Length: 585
Image 1 (cartoon, rainbow, N blue to C red):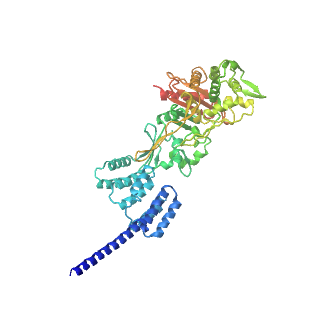
Image 2: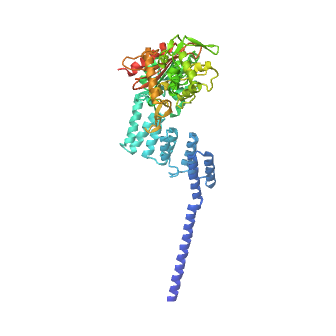
Image 3: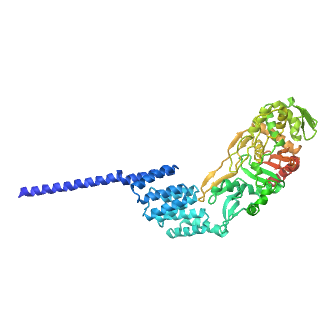
């Protein structure tokens, strides 16, 4: 009996061990399938495709997803992955199509494609259409998710779908009553709806200069008469300014300019001729004002485009940044800079007798007046004597004129958010007559923008350091995060401080006792230099470059009166008015 019982127990034990062995094989099979089988391969392909999409390699990502389809064409995550890829490619329709297919096939939330996190990333980068697609899909996969509803609401809000955003915020508040983020954005959206305005562009002091009507979807140019070339326009008929060059920031982001709208109004009002005014902060390079005449009204462009187009003075040209003009005597600052820094002695040059003209290589070289005996550099600058400056140039040689012109920003492309023409001075000088011309800022190939003219004054004001000019201070996304910021950057170290200080004394004297007297402002010391040139046959271009207060400069400026008269008569008075109103008590 014992023997039979023992055999039975032994048989049972063998059976149990056999079952355990089968279980082990099954578990091993499952582990193999999980680690090395179809599911693992599929997961690997999806993860790899995602990384390729993030890297921007869409063709390779497509290859990986097609491999995944060959493994399991019914797997909904593959369609989810295609949706993710097409959204990254900014093909919204295809993305939505694939996401819909993924939903129909029963896709569930997956950590591989965490659409809420992906949407948040798009949101932070200001890619609001893509963010909306991700959040809408996320909210179908995870209904009632507070963060998903908030993200969807903010995306709608950024895209100017204000009522849809408010409705979505309300759904979020049902899920999470009293939530501070949802409440904050809903109140903002409601305020914009009530005010019928979304602010997009601000001046440096937070004053809105471009808005959009919520109800009509129409842009509101709150400074249309003053910032037409800066804000610009974007349509099939006309593309210029920020709306053209930075249009990808609209809608959704806010741009803060360096422009001071008060200074812009003052400069715009003071300039009553064709031309331009550029005002800089000499310490930073920030463009505080940039006026270009004649102006256009953005509200009337569509209706009156062909009238504007037919006007003789190109109304769409941004003269401040893109106009190229003969500089004339403002470039005597360059010649004087080279003279001081090269250590030339006044005794080797002066006195110079000016009879109003002289003959160089058989050609008559003119001064604008007979100055008689010019005894010093100071006197030459005060009277802006061409004969004296041709003498300085002949002693210096053209190489130094060219070198210092380049130091001041000629032949240098300015990288800015708006187009800027390059001021130019030729590399070669073919004759003594040409050298005389260029020593006095003249010549058909010697061209300057009002922006670089302002930079010249700014360099002297800033102790010889030229700061890179810039017009956009920062850009923020709808979350309030700074996505772009421009800080002051040294463009060139042009002069020694001692040279800049000496030039300042000369420029102050030019305003106090010289040709710049019409720029004098009571109680404020102004350093300036007049200039007169002839870019075209239409008339004389009047220039004035200056900075004030001379002993602690707050602004540096260039004024161009296009074909409107001599600089001392037409441009200097504009400077006086601007400085009086901008800095006067």
